[in-house]
Image (cartoon, rainbow, N blue to C red; front, side, top):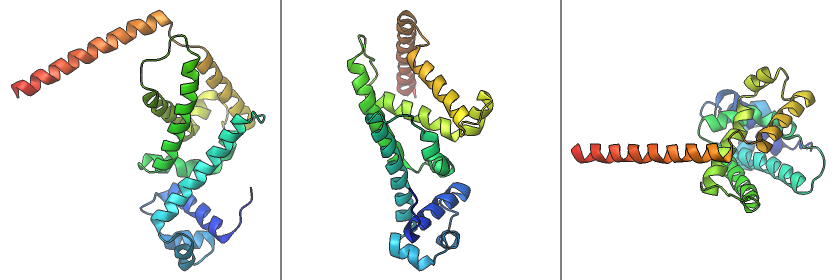
Length: 211
């Protein structure tokens, strides 16, 4: 969608600068110059740099919601990298700085819904709370975009191209559809994990009592 209004130009310029230099170093004056508007127009449309940042996150969430609607409608080939691609640097920088919380939380909530449905079809549903699994899964998904140059190098294909994205999505489908561990191995490692946790808790409690 081509959105060439002054308000949209300000938002896009802000996302570019936030991605290039970070939120703290990006000034409203520099954003205005990049957008070809006055600083007063930024105040008119957004009020403050903080509210402008929130608008940037809202735009990313809107793009994600379009992808989710496409998935729900089974509307053909999906291209999340193409949709988010122009804003990948912004999102990577924002997440690294501990920002974009609304984007992360939206993705976690969506993933939680998907996992809840998947759990209902499992003969042996996972023990870990679905919110915890959704949070980790979201972090994994976002890491692909943040590490795009490394992922592309490992795949020997630029994941922003149709060929690279196709290979990436093939790999993800195989990872999701082919468990790495057998159920017996998972039970063994789960037991080891619980035993280690109890040991560490006991050591921590003992250290507190003796401290």
